[in-house]
Length: 202
Image (cartoon, rainbow, N blue to C red):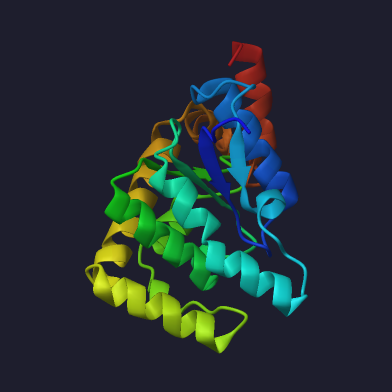
């Protein structure tokens, strides 16, 4: 088995279309080669509701092992507009592990779906308000977070990641092109302005 070169995580309630766009973008423009080997939680972790096998997987702590291996491309979280990823408490657990392992953590988002206001409001997150499928999982995760600096440390870490995403959006050509041209479509009376702009070659 070849070593893992990166970790990709997502929210189960998130958008598949946005996730596809994010992965495509990070391969085309984010410095990650198409051939990179990723541990993708949707495919790499046992998700069946057979509690016996789930308990066996849980005891093996696969995510802890992959993070401890310090993969080249770090840990990548896919954020979509359909679901707040940190409502899933296990992803708070991952962030806590990455933070304490000093591993690179990147937040991906679809630039065509997110707005600056949406990203700015997402910077204030209370990670321990998330939930897990089983109460014992929630107790386990909350204990670990408390042992490694407390929830405020994780919340601040996620806030900094989100503010970096906001800066990325504001500086992107996608956003700048949209704000430059949005006056054309914002109000009905812009139709006449658009005609003038077309005549001027704008």
